[in-house]
Amino acid sequence: MANDSTLPANMDILVMERNVRGWQGAFRTNPAFHLMLTFFVGIVAGLGAVAFRRLIGLMHNAFFFGQISSRFNDLQHSAASIWGLGVVLVPVLGGLVVVWLVRTFAPEAKGHGVPEVMDAIYYGSGVIRPVVVLVKALASSISIGSGGSVGREGPIIQIGAAFGSSLAQWLRLQEWQRLGLIAAGAGAGIAATFNTPVGGILFAIELMLVEVSARTLVPVMIATGTAAFVSRLFLGNYPSFIISQHIVNQTLRQSADTYAAYVLLGLLAGGAGLLFTSSLYWTEDRFEHWIKNPYARHAAGMLGVGLVIYFMITFTGHYYVEGVGYATVQDILDGVIAQPGFLLLLLLLKILTFSVTLGSGGSGGVFSPALYVGAALGGLYAVIANHLLPGIGVSMTIAAALGMAGMVAASTGAAVTGAVMIFEMTSDYHIIIPLIIVASLAFGVRRLMTRETVYTRKLIRRGHFIPEARHSNLYLMLPAGEFIETPLIRVKGGRTLADIAVLLHRGREIPHILVVEGTQPRAVLTAPHVRDLLRHRQISTPIENFASADWFSVPVDYQIYDLVARFRATHHECALLCRIDPPEHHEDVVAIVTIEDVLAYTSLPMRLLRPHMTQ
Image (cartoon, rainbow, N blue to C red):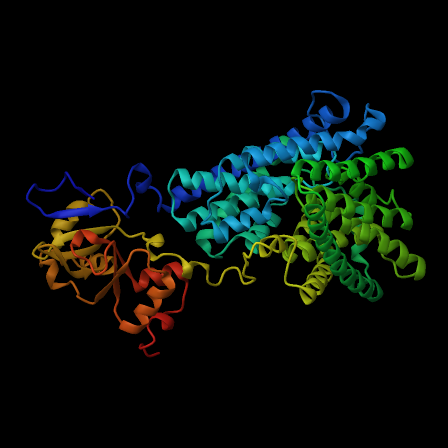
């Protein structure tokens, strides 16, 4: 609280700017400033995605070939390692480094990242330590580059979210803004990785945002669009997977029998999603039960992965299941891999190596493995369906793409994201209906069996439950002081609005006014009322003539849920948020909150706060 030097020396008007100090306070509630921050988050997320992909290439070349180079095309199979049989130990060496990094610097960098972001949103007030950005990037790039069978999307999501959280903490933004920047960073990471800006937006909506409104959604849109643009500048405007136009055109001629086949594919994808999730946590439990030492645990797991990839390169000519696996997915989409037995082997081995990599203590994402398993499932299903019913006309490529969407929907719970991302990847509008069928049924099968996803199961095991209706009530549990946006001015009752106008000549925001008498708060003049009086030029009448004693006091940490109940019970229009309740001095009043403030912040219906009002 500070005196305003532009006022006459004898004027008793004190200004408090939203209970913050420093230059950040002038900007933290400015919408334009917040949007500018999301633009910056998008740039960093886009650059982070590019740098992370380069880092994976650098680690892969170092571990497999002893070279210092970041050149790596994830749509092409890696050449055989120069170490021969020694490639078995490559994942072990990488795994030991990962365990050391995670245990020494950031335990939350372990695993697939997204649950930690969700945990920070719902149970950590949106606080993610800045060190997570660096440790997650290093640990995941080493895990993937040394042969771990995990994806790069989870780490990029966590990196983008951690940067958004760190930026918000540095600027001392309000909690809702911090949570919004986390969601923007996460969605931007997905958009930059897959070149799917709409998919990034939907990912943030389905899994990250606790509130869907213009003030949270527009920043996510800005961040995802910016990140996708930055990614395209460095990596080109190409889809993550390439599907020929000839195959895409086949969706123009889909029969009723083909759609019936897609229904069964959706049901199978739901079952595969359950297997995918359950195998990960079953494997994690077994490793933790069998091997107590984290270094020995992960070394044993990665030795198993090393043996699998050596077996694959020896007998098939490619590693197939190491790393993100995009080359294998592309082979399935191209129809290069069409043998049902081999497709089934790839499906099972991917689930095995993915579960062992993460379950034993690795760092990486689940999104790519889900796409891999979905593509293998869809391809296998198409081969069998066309063999049993030759005239059904199920394209292997289209079935693989649909299987990818179904697996994302079933395992992560992001059904809309899965469908739209595959649509963006194929650029085929006519695949929308099959995508809706498969993704919806896969999600439904998983939800029928369990409410837990591959993300939420990890949190539920900690006792941290994530609401399915993610945008309903989180903000009602926050302290009312978290959404103070309107400035507060304290004045003596004899002052006029002409005195207040002195403060507003430089474009300051219209404040709430607290009328004081001696040391005590007496009445309130709300900002909307002040704005109306100034508009009608009623500025010469003493403020006390307009002020109202229609208020009650509550502690500054009073929950919004309880504040709503007080408004309903008392029928008052204003609440004084106080350091001490009841206030012993007017300086104990931190802010004024009106019913209109609560309505604007929570999007609750008017009748809930004013039940006494008639229609």
